[in-house]
Length: 163
Image 1 (tube, one colour):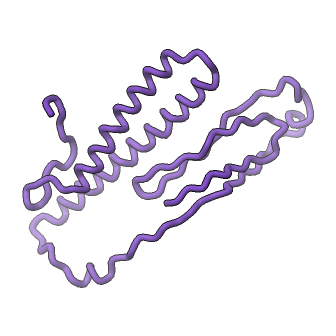
Image 2 (image 1 turned 60 degrees about the horizontal axis):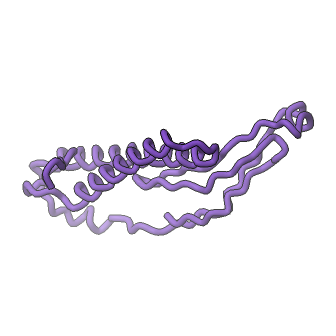
Image 3 (image 1 turned 45 degrees about the vertical axis):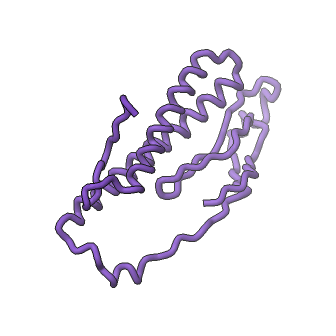
């Protein structure tokens, strides 16, 4: 474990690292290592498809790092605000909402092109790589990447994501 350091809120109110803080910090460290690997892959990639997927994964990885960092800062603020307060508050515990699950599927996005772009130069049309990235709390999800050109009028992401 030499060389590894914990960043962010290192101790809870009792003076010990909180389980959630360590878990989020571990996720940040993992995403940083993944990002470094993606950079290496990107520097060695020669095929267009490899580069597209590497860039997409890099964007998702960066979004996760930012979300985890914000969650860690939020937890740190909560710890600072709780200092000196009684931790047992029965009224708030009774009103804590339970977390549910949401399934997101069949995301459909209509595309609008200029008539001149849509109806001309179909054989030499520029292509675009598109994917959806969405965030729920500190969790970041993505869809498969779809390649479209100006002949396509809508995109449908058929992935099923459970939040």
